[in-house]
Image (cartoon, rainbow, N blue to C red):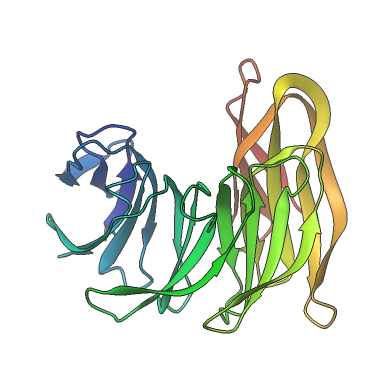
Length: 264
């Protein structure tokens, strides 16, 4: 029997800032719900693990962070909204749904990274921040399955990738990777493989995809492999469920918008 998959999409516009599309197979997506956020640009969305809520990062200092409940078929209802003084760049629920990790421009008292606890229905409460110390926002965030470690690709050439430990109330920086490129996204597989992608402002041949191994005992990551191409870099990375392939969104590479890369 066909299985319906609901996909949350954000748009950089005040119209359909967040939209839900259903997919039942074939080549058609059907929009079933949307919300307009006045004056905001949608920058990132994240489904709660329960499937009952969607978080939105708005690239706007007044819209900030929003959480919508989802009725499962055709309705998004706003249940939480946080006004910040920073442009939000990413929102990612922890694997168990008890926390929402956010990254944002450091104009919000230099708190470029904030973790919020979630009461399960309608309230986010700040539960840990990190001062990035610059105007650069963090971007792609990945959690370990036990919520104890967080990896963040950062829009900086000197602090391109962060590794933090998290105890429920405080973020502690464990390692910073200087990739000499801007960090943009990261993903994790089985709490031990970390994929990170980077970009530059002018096309050049470089290793824009790097694969790291995470050692929980030493709380460090070590480079194990990389992938090089001649472009401006990559803007997204995602493991498949088996960890055998990576999907990579490219940036500025002629006739190549997507790579599928084997991991072995």
